[in-house]
Length: 431
Image (cartoon, rainbow, N blue to C red; front, side, top):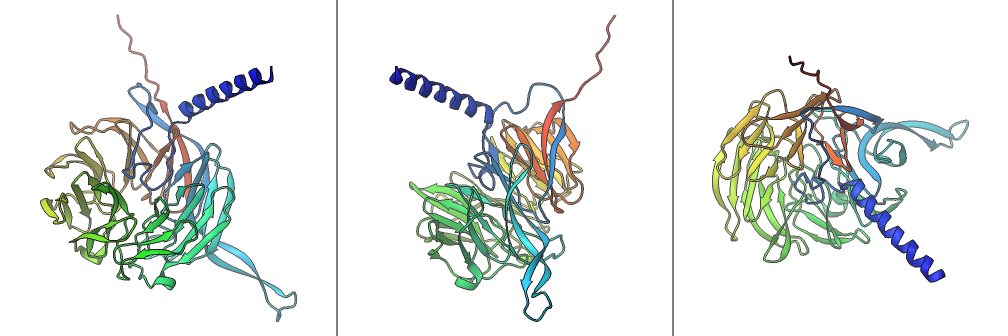
């Protein structure tokens, strides 16, 4: 009887697990999602109605910054910077304690369904506004129940995802001499097996995930602002990183530089991630520079085309069925570009330097001024499925779809959770 009950319980637990998996959709555990390409495989997150509008389910304050959102194992993580008052023991004072207000970077862990703050890890860090609001630029990375973060000053943390406890930390600039770019370190951590790889130094640096000790480094020259982008070459995992004046491919486990290609832009601001697809790499930059497609089939990198009117300044585009969708600084439009030719298929005005992700053939785009755009990912033209304002102020952080809900934030730290609802239309009367 006991054995029968055990079997029945096991079956029920299995069925419950299956139902849970089918209901929750897909997590988004790191920058640009589980496939590192800005595309979610979550199906049926939007229905068949002709038009939708966003409805805000909850709001939360998460500090100044441009960190995007990650969602994993029923929790949401992001970063910001806020003024905090701390106690400082001072023997010269009457009470022996004084209060000091200073800027702090904060790693937030929230309930993705309610917005309730579950824990915060805070550490002193300057806001460093410079032509923009300031605050952290990198997005947390979740792997093996750990949270990996990187500050603009190069402070790397590994935190326990459950309670925010510090497992290890490393000051990349102080310990290894890597120099921060003009606007600070911005790339998110990329975890490959037992290593954590950061876009810091000439062509990246890797620490052991277990204890934060050095695994490999590639020099101390200034890096770009992108996150390491993984790809496979002859059965081995590699990453492409944007440097200050080049981009390069590096063997993920050894740090061996496979090739390096010049990419010199105004202000040395190589910001968006490269987009790698098989033996092709798409690179684009703003500041009136342009974009190019390269063939990396061999150790020799070959330029296939260059187009000056395709200028991705901040947020990386998404590649879907041979077409690139993203913000174009040339005209500040949402643009569709044919990947193999560089031809602009269409451009929708009013988007500014917003950001885009994609799910189930639909674009989820957040304009620079806080409008959420939902559109078909089609080269035939801009086909809108929904639009609505969900934020105000500057919005550069990419929106995220996870488990049926959309999360977005602005520079000031307003984080919103959004759900799409069908737009009611007036019935058409016929005689």
